Image (tube, rainbow, N blue to C red):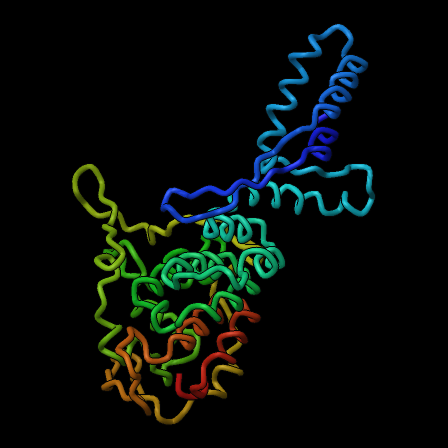
Length: 341
């Protein structure tokens, strides 16, 4: 009955103004009188013992809000496969005036096609800062298509801040190998993982002959991640600090975060590719002491960002997360040679 009334509803265009005083055309639904009579007859035939007038008015009342209605055929074998799209379109239709909410919905449903066709259109302008949170979520959930699209609208220099990079490392799923590696390196008196902790983990994986950026650069090795992320170590009732590892924020684990078994003796990771990329310019380190060298860069950025090569930082994170497609995406984005890492 609703579908019949919906398909036979006409729309009248009326000139009006919005809340900001801007002229606009509003479409007002209208059901012709002959359709009302046919609708009432159908209601009487379907529910002879019900109040036909009341039911008809209820249907008409629903149809007057046609912007909240989507008609979908369950009999069509082809459309049955796309029922999720129909539901998504219905939800997005109800949020047609909120493009950011539509984008969040499309991300949750992992429908990059909807974003390209209906959300990122020429008549919409986007604030890059509003898109940064969406990009962060896409990274954590390993939504590669969304990451690639959003990178066209966001300057990575603005996006990759110290705080945001720390968030990525502190929200690693607990069943991921990287979580256990960082847990083993983390300062037990800290609530969070620092960039120095990440650097130590990389050094342990690659070898002592490699001095990672997060250890050799004073801009990063002295950062207090607890202060930046505004978290404190957990304490017992007596005030003593608990030493039970990281307080990772739990997020919905992405599709590639499968449980990994760690051998009781050690975790063996191949470093052939990484080792071949190491340049002799790196500062050598001894087993017990790390030498910190001053930061040098082949060119100065026009603006002062937290990181000189932001795509490099995301590349390193993606490699440690074992997300090869994301790593390749950031490797193509960054112009710096791998041997300069």
